[in-house]
Image 1: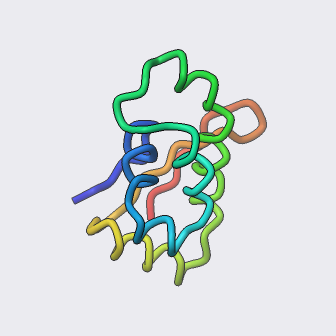
Image 2: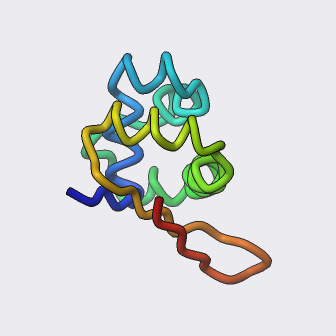
Image 3: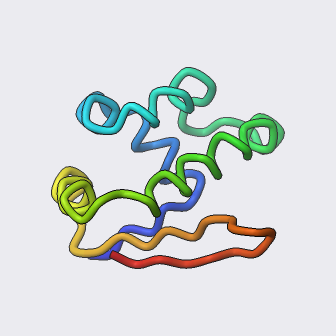
Length: 91
């Protein structure tokens, strides 16, 4: 199964204690948003969501394997901003 890290997926992962313990970057969004938040709240947190996506794109190979194992995915697709453009990474 491939996991696509869209905003709703990140918000859902941030509610999981095991994910937050292994990847503390999710703690920031956990404090701000809950699953099912309104669109305007998500827009206010867009910067944080993008920071998490960039962080995921910069994981070491060992961290990538740990993340995939933790979320039960064969692969993870991250679409993140870089220099004003959307970049895509699958690991």
